[in-house]
Length: 372
Ligand code: SP5
Ligand code: ZN
Image 1: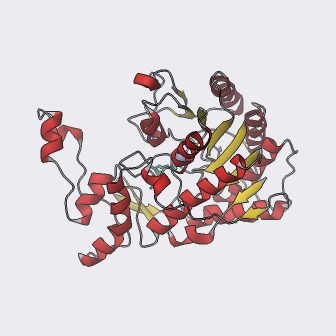
Image 2: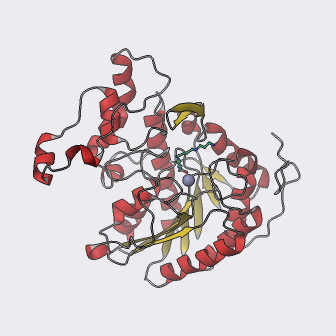
């Protein structure tokens, strides 16, 4: 299958993030995408294509234009204010209890976007661990173009295509960024498919984390079914959404399916959830699945707690393609850099019905012997 990739992601050169108030080495780094690119190139079976530009229209079809404008100017505003920071994170967040007792109308009339970058980052962001740097906006725009070019390949007749999106997208909601995500690549892709085909679309989200942004965007939509397998929010980010009883409202009632798993979840437990997810997708009409593909479910991932091995990615790819639907496969998370390339290769080869043979140079083992 074709791979859509652009080096534009390199401008989002993240080195440090904050976790609970302290700086730590960043997880969502450029090396992630480069590891995947290198492995798919070494495979030889994945022709590469560059994304084409799609402009802002498909983004504002999903996101508040105010969020787009903020992300566009955030870095220059920070600089203009003379704040010497390696990256932007918020000072204050508008926690909903700040407005307790005020009517929704009063909040709408009285609360507005501040002028200072540290306040604006709190207005539009939802966590302190999504660093924004000089090149973030253009990289995030390029990731959207990667997703939309992947859509075009599939709508143009390909059975499946893979978009190597970076930064990822599934935590970004209509009016909110966070979780290393700025624009919701998968949601923008799903909307573009709905508009182009008039069909219903399903999103299968297999990142370790719940895709709160994708759920929020399609919560009331009857034409996009969101199905996610992820760590239970009782113990894992994003904490406030992702439970099984969140099923959608209005025209979207019953269109949202969350399958939260326990810590230590095994390949077998995972595949049971995958079958439930794919059954829920097969139950509604449509010919395209957008896959939010994360490898932070891997046993060695530094921020996940599942126990999956590379073999299971091959099987999940195989079963997903086995639905007979066309696949728009978009990269989300996954932070164990030594395994990322092999895990992506396994998933994509499984989807194509090709066997998985580890590359001799992979240099890592399932039990944790890590090189490089
Ligand atoms: C796209 C995606 O996978 N986003 C994940 C965002 C997770 N943000 C919270 C990260 C918490 C990091 N915990 C570090 C623990 C160090 N031992
Ligand atoms: Zn994740």
